[in-house]
Amino acid sequence: MNKKLLIALQNRDKARLAELRNKVEDPETRAEDLSVIQDEINQITEELQDVKEQLAELEEPGDDEAPSDDANPNDNADERDKTGEPNNEARSANPEQRQEALEAIGAALATRNVKSNKNREEEIRSAFANYIVGNIDDTEARSLGLVSGNGSVTVPDFMAREIITYAQEENFLRRLGTRVTTKENIKYPVLVKKAEAQGHKSERGSDMPETDIEFDEIELSPTEFDALATVTKKLLARTGLPIEQIVMDELKKAYTRKEIQYMTHGDESDNVNEGALAKKAAVFKPSGEVVLTSGQSLYDALIEMKNTPLKEIRKKGRWILNTAALTAIEKLKTDDGFPLLRPLDAPVEGCNYKLLGYLVEEEDAIDGEDPSVPVFYFGDFSKFYIQDVTGSLEVQKLVELFSRTNRVGFRIWNILDAQLIHSPFEVPVYKYEIRKTNTGGE
Image (spheres, rainbow, N blue to C red):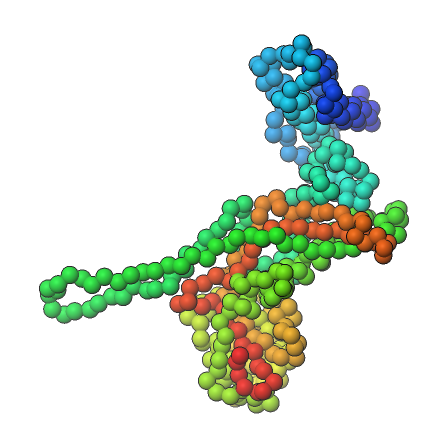
């Protein structure tokens, strides 16, 4: 049997399974009818498995194989045989019988060709795009492997990774921070009181004095986090365009802008983050006055700032500057005439400069209300912890909300938390802003 015929047979069987799903979900379907449906499901499952094996044999050598199904759909049928045949005398099917049939249909629909991972991803990507723009309904979306319901769809894992990867490229805190993926809240102990040791030359004649060690606990407790992108109906109606790429690109950008704001400043009225970098970094105050027109005063202040963190922190330290700060130091020179900001022969970890021996990144995301104010951060940014909740990324289509402007909204929803976490004895990041008053620090 040739490949086209096998694929046609496979599509016919899957279409029949979709019809059977509707019958199973119909509350008027009786137990005796469900028994007949179950037999047909088992028969179609066997046919699909046979087609799958034949298609696998026709695959060209060298193609990457998609992961095999976790369980053979026939295994579900065997389990059903152990529990006995449905009660044909019952007027209507009980919930367990319906659920059993639906699971069998889902397993059968999951049976697919052994094809390359890339082809499978393209199939899911297309189904995802068609669902969110309204070309297919919930039933079809589920049959194609999407988790959908209530007008929203969970973003497939590989597409979610694309969004997070894009966010990591654009969000320096994702790139430099520590990311944890889990469903559970995470608690980090931080030392708030140190133990004290005693010294004595003579033989101790009394009990050793006790000292307490105290820890506080900071919890990453993920909260709802969303972003919104809109696309014109005209654009969605045009054929030949990669709709899914257009939508995903807009969602990536909207999501990343919102995430950067949350992690860096966290000062939106409806989305406050007390652990944001700007709020949690320790404020650096130089010992003397800093005047931007005086290169030496700024140079001295930056040396102080660089030496403020503990040596263990400095080992992993780097500078994060906004454009105003970069401009302020680009013309500075050391006493022996060398530029304070030293260009690298080749980029290192995305950085083109070193300042006082440490890598420098330029990030306008750290701008305050006035972008002309120079902002400097220095320290170990791996102490910024980000928790992404597994499988929480969803997309919802919003039609009525933007109908007056002839646009369609796509709301991307996620659960996360992000905080700079540290003990007061080991401050990892310092912040320095040079105000218009020409004096140092906040």
